[in-house]
Length: 138
Image (cartoon, rainbow, N blue to C red):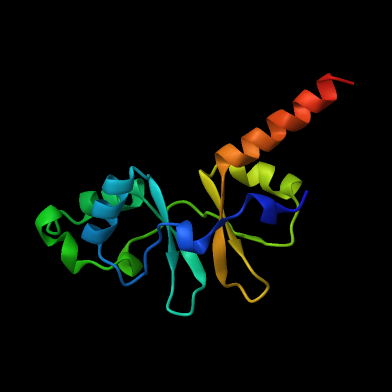
């Protein structure tokens, strides 16, 4: 099954720019209760994912920042510890299962590497469950 059916379009995805600040990321993640947010550059390309852990490690290793100065640090200066890999829109659902075991979502890009949305792990799990259910009825 083509993954486009499961796509949450970019317009409905919370994302940040690499030029956003740590404080903006923390506030947006807290407000939406997310532990990870995709980073999209000025050209609309997916450049990675910032996680709560990335922000925490940056604060731990640079104590002079602290929360009071988090507005001075851009996300492009925060190391990303997880490689959240994107997939192309023409891939099949089976291609996502391995990625979904380690990622809350899978970023989706077009053939020019422009970010077009995400597929959440819950949709992948639901797809697998329905597939399993249909096989049990046979």
